[in-house]
Image (cartoon, rainbow, N blue to C red; front, side):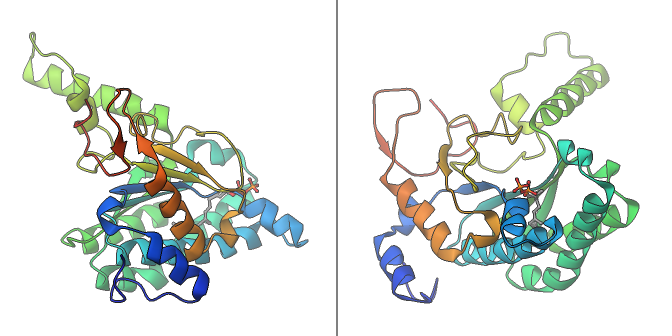
Amino acid sequence: MITPELLKPADRQEARLLEQLDPRQFPQHIAIIMDGNGRWAQRRHLPRVAGHRAGVKSAREVIETCARLKIQALTLYAFSLENWRRPKAEIDFLMRLLREYLRKELPVIHKNNIRLVVIGRPEQLPAEVQRDVAQAMELTAPNSGMRLAVALNYGGRAELVDAFNAILERVRHNGGASFRVDEQTIADHLYTAGLPDPDLLIRTSGEMRLSNFLLWQIAYAEIYVTETLWPDFSRAHLLEALVDFQKRERRYGGLTVAKAAGRTAGSRG
Ligand code: FPP
């Protein structure tokens, strides 16, 4: 049962969902593919960027809710390596929106003890975005609450390439003739090193694709796809996903059935 200090329900629907939730069975790490901003705008005869702006509101609500529920980690897929193929004006808008978000929300994030990290290849982002992101990470580095990972210029295969190159570099440097790679070595060299693997992956707007997101880390994640477009994804939608997650039986490839609950990286059997 969620106590009122954790989250005050806004209406009867939220109250009903909260009643069904057991905080001991929360996922440790929720990863979200925020999709459908363009379609949301299109349906309203608005430019695509209006969908992105509305999407920031959903991101803010989800971040706040996860922090209140004391979810350990939340990863949001904000900009993929493939997104560079979009029109320049849309890319520029997304970059401006991210900077605007950081400028407005960083004090709130910091006050709520959230630690912000960026995963991806930030070195290929515009210099001013790199600077803002670096400052945000530095400011929130000492925070001990929820870890908020924003995937920016991110690709799952590129992450694996970067991890393997980092491992090779280490071997070259330390001269490790007998060095062997195991799963933990790879996990330790991913952008997400130190974070538990996501145990719940949410994708909005109904697409049944992984879109090159956290390919290694989601090996055992429960996948929840909703038709709701990201700008319409509210706190109640997140609570619905959590209720659904808690009903799942997680098998990890074995016969023993574990009711949905988080496992840390490297702890799989
Ligand atoms: C996909 O919608 C969404 C994105 C490209 C990510 C943008 C996300 C935001 C603006 C949310 C803000 C996040 C933070 C962390 C501030 P789409 O354009 O692919 O939609 P479509 O598939 O309907 O075209």
